[in-house]
Length: 206
Image (cartoon, rainbow, N blue to C red; front, top):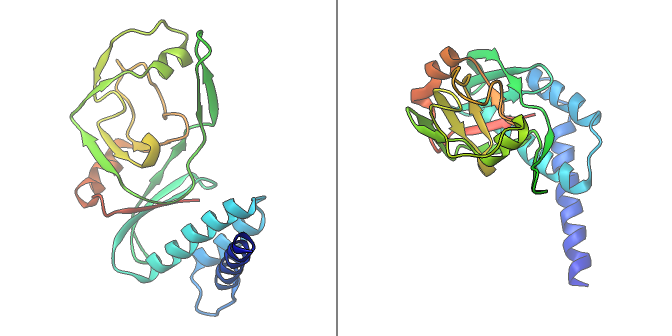
């Protein structure tokens, strides 16, 4: 009985959030219309739908607020640094592809492009990057101890599970292009917003 009541409560919560998101309003911002359309065209499980609704309703609240935040539109390949509804800076973003990497010993790593609402875990610049084993497996090279200065890029914003928003890696890095499942943006754009990014910054990825 307890499990049934919990499942019913979860369904009702999702239904309430769905009603909020899809409620028509003359004052709704343009972003709300886009989110409605994207969500209507997305094939999601109930659990995934719950996460999507959490992120999107949180994003809509951010539009009404006065805090800086980052939004990434994976369909338009655009990243925006915003203050409420105002776009402070916009740039192109390259989304790292979804892939599963398998090493010769059978170990695998799966990277799925991140979506949802997240809080920044940390940020790195002027750091020494130890090349991970999965990257050697991806490039077909034998693993070895290698450290590259700013190997992921000069500026790295760390999200959960080591997904990142990063600037282009240097020429001597074995990673060229975006980290799988992560997000590559121009160095100048990330540098411009760098001082405003903290562990309180929210990131919305759709």
